Amino acid sequence: MNVFTLSWRYLWSRPLATLLNLLLLSLGLASMAFVLIAQDQIDRAFERDLAGIDVVVGAKGSPLQLILAGVFHLDVPPGNIPLAEVQALSQHPQVARLIPLSLGDNLQGFRIVGTTPDYPAHYGATLAQGALWARPMDAVLGAQVARATGLQVGQGFVGAHGLGSGGAVHGDSHYAVTGVLAPCGCVLDRLILTATESVWRVHDDMHASDDMDDEDRAAIEADREVTLALIRYRSPIAALSFPRYVNDSTALQAAAPAMEITRLLGMVGVGTRVLRGLGAVLLGVAALSVFIALWSAVRERRADLAMLRMLGAPPWKVGALLLCESFWLAVLACGLGLLAAHGLTALLGGMLMAEQSLAIAGWQWVSTEVWVPVLALGVALVAALVPALGAYRVDVMSLLNSRSFP
Image (tube, rainbow, N blue to C red; front, side):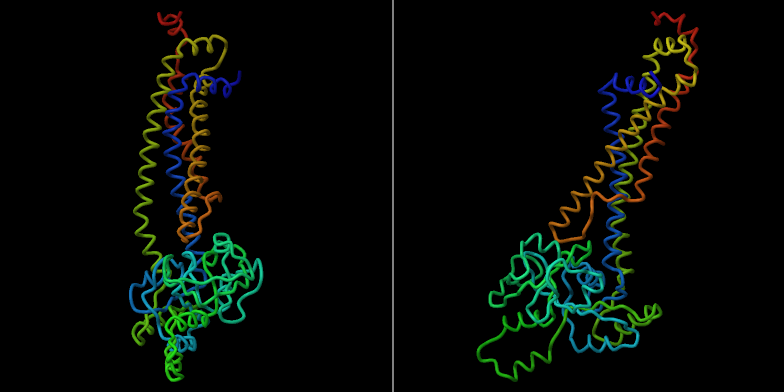
């Protein structure tokens, strides 16, 4: 037998100890890998949805709330803003593009967003079926919405009031599905897009009365509002002056996504550090357990080691047996740890998808995962180094003369 085959046999000669060591090492590696994979996926999701959005303008309130509501659609917006002021901002010399968003209704928890065709174009979205909306009350479904609701092009639906499921249904205002977007892995997958006029019409119908005259309708038209606006600057220099202009000179609020998300990730970072610490503790315990098991194995196999030396095995080959046992543990634990980490990430992604939250892919390779096998081999090497050195220095004559040797 060669060293690898013999070390494999030796490894499973003590199955309970091997399984315990394998479990501890796998849990430690899985904790580390899960943090790396989940953090990378969340960062990618944020970067993907924030791409090309320099500032979000909305009602006064929490800047982070404005970003979460307007870019990621994970929160409730602080309020509405006058359409006239938004149109004035679109003419500002530092604004290259402004995309208005109007929120307020949902379908089974999926938000109905009134906007312009610039919104899907901003994310490079393509249609899997049908076409974009051409008139009010036409709607285009995101890929996740289409899967969850089963709606197809040509079918209709009615929205419910509010941004969460359970609101009052707008039974008199029917949307017609004109298209379904191809999956993009971005926020559009979980949105229903329509014209801004659709949102106005639905709420006009909800508040309309039979005795409303033309003057009342004209007043409603004059007071049109949207929820917020996504803005891209004409040049990076605008980042220094435009938010201050909006916050100081208007009744609106400008929030910089990069700044707020950095602050959010800083708060979330506490949890990742805790998980990394837990993984480090588990790896330390696993290394100690492997060390004790291998050190005990050297003492138990004194007769075997003497026999190998008598058969002509050089000292380095005897020491390599212990290193190879630890190597086998590292390889098995690395595979199990990565599999568990990706499985946990996929489970997290499924839970977030069920909550119409960030899109996270659990089975996607992350470049930082390369450190997991390196860490596994490092722990195995440290744990096996002293026992392997002891096996290397075994004195054959002393073993042969020992009473414990038959």
